[in-house]
Amino acid sequence: MKAMIFAAGLGTRLRPLTNEIPKALVPVNGKPALEWLILKFKKAGITQIIINIHHFPDKVIGFINDNHSFGIEIKISDEREMLLDTGGGLKKAAWFFDDGKPFLMHNADVLSNINLNEMLSFHNQKKALASLFIQERTTSRYLIFDEEKRLAGWKNTKTNEVILSRENPTSPKDFAFNGIHIIDPEIFTMMTEQGKFSIIETYLRLASKFQIVGFEPKNAVWMDIGKLENLPEANILAKQIY
Image (cartoon, rainbow, N blue to C red):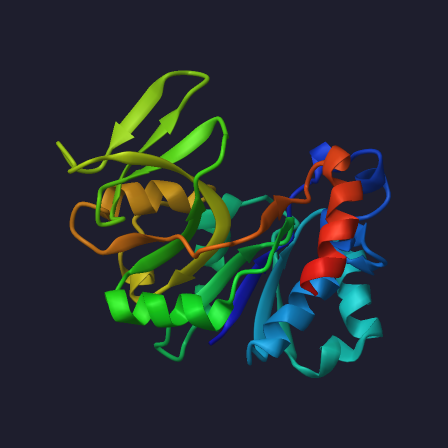
């Protein structure tokens, strides 16, 4: 399985740290967040990774080169000219996913103990176009799933905006999305969106016809490490799960 790490963001919630370094290089328990992810991927058998860059791009490239790409293949998707968000960023990197196999998409600023191979097995069992790591937790934006964990919509509790992909889903329930997906490369043939866009837009458009499902593993631990106030707890959590 190949993987993409989204590391291009400005990291505004981590300022002042990200006034000097990109968010992917903010240290967590003594190592940059990006290093923890790469090591986790290697442990899961992933040896081909692409990383998108925008904010302090040369520092990300320098870090990878200084560590000799951690002994695996690491490519760069350069978004210096414009941040493309998750959908646009993935579409720009489509050339990398040329083996016809499902691939992993992972935000750089999340920490979790999720078993990636277990998630891949789930994805294959469901014959899904995309599988999304979800949890029941409080957030301002939710994905709506039916009783079979098929994507049915999206809602923003601050603006009361709701988008439904399917009318009258059975037993709809709100879940928070954790920024980790496994996706079938067939999705590239279905992306009609252009430029900068969220992958969630694509998912919502396709959910009525294709299997876009939620993966909710038991006892999953997850944390948003893109917030300055979360870093002390993240240091403790990293010791437990890595």
